Each structure stands twice: as structure tokens, then as C-alpha cells.
Amino acid sequence: MKLINEFKSFAMRGNVVDMAVGIIIGAAFGKIVSSFVNDVIMPPIGLLVGGIDFSDLALTLKAATESAPAVVLKYGVFINTVIDFVIIAWAIFMVIKAMNTLKKKEEAKPATPPKPSDEVVLLAEIRDLLKK
Image (tube, rainbow, N blue to C red; front, top):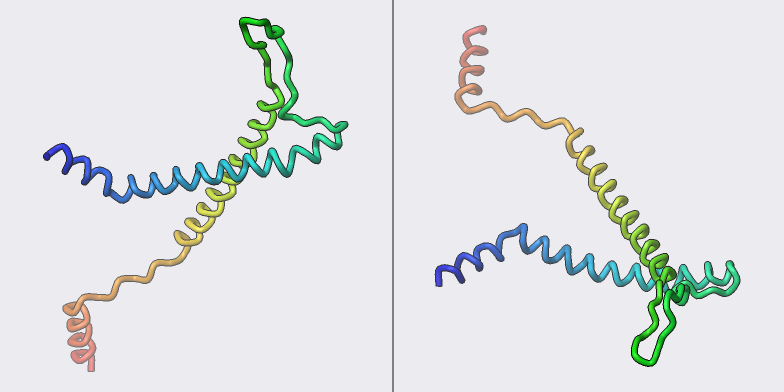
């Protein structure tokens, strides 16, 4: 039971839950970007360069035989994956840049001085009365 309680306290810490949510959202974002690249960006680029489907681009290193499949170097899929990475990296860069900008604005705000304690206020009133 001690191990289960220890795992429960570990799993329910804020950082672990936040990380899990980030991973799930990141995976979904990755799927969206992959679909965007494969279904929206690459078809027009392929059309511009002569009707090429990048996911079909491959170099056959060894033809298929009756007992073994072909050995194929699929560089078109690699190009799609690199474009996926660049888009995701750019999006993450923009989010971090926005967060840093907000953080700098927050740090730039002048902090209000702390309110003087009751003793200091009372002493200031006594001083002012003595001056009169």
C-alpha cells in the first residue's frame, strides 16, 4: 500500500499533471500539423514542381524478389516530416516568445511599496503631533 500511496502523491503533483496535459495536447497538435503539411501544403508544392506527390518519392535500392520485399529509401516521406518539424518548431518558438514578452512586461511593472506597519504609522502620527 505504501508504494501505491507514494505513486498517487507523485502522479497528483501539479507538474506531473501539467506535463501530461501538455503531452496530450502536443500529440494532437502534431497530428494537426502533419495533416496540414500532407493535405494542404504539399499538394500545391507538388503541383508547382510538376505534379509530384512527395510521399511517393522513393529510391529503390533493391527490387523485390519472391522471398523478400523491395528495399526502398522513402525520401519524400522524410521531406514531409522535416516540414512538419519546422512548422511545429516555429509554433513552439512563437508561443515561447509570447510567454517571454508577457513575463518581461510583468517584471517591468513597478512593484508597489509595502504598506507601513501599524507601529510605523503610529510613530509617524506621534512625530507629527510633537511637531505641532
